[in-house]
Image (cartoon, rainbow, N blue to C red; front, side, top):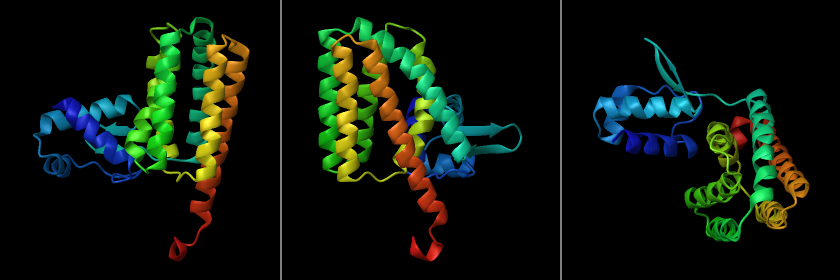
Length: 217
């Protein structure tokens, strides 16, 4: 039940049903999820561990806010951890890793085209973590997970265009090709370009949202 509560609350945060800064009142959540208080509390604690929720003793819980400073901090941390993972993965990459990653990448492209953002997000996550788990590290995928989840909040709020989807597919393919070729330097360079381009698109989107008059949104 706690796992279900965490998954449903996670989806509500990612899709904006619970926007940044929302006060997560336990009574409201138990009613919305049709659950008792205990699994909902545990679900909130799991999301706090992912960095998506802030719990203040005796005051309550909130969806963590978003900001440019947080976005940049998240980007720098992702780049440090994921570059290390993909460098090691490129040295160890197997045919099975390549097959799994290719399938996830194809699914991501297909689901993005038919506008199924939740399923596309899952395929996108599968692609990246296939690479990171290929590093053979027990800890790197675990360390990446909370930073990744925070980054996904920013990415999910940015509506993709056909052009951005094409660029993203090419960037992902370049990372995969470098891993298949067992070229660590090329893999890190491709990952860096991908993350830097994603950061640029998200910053532009955030700037537009902050400067657009309310009546024109």
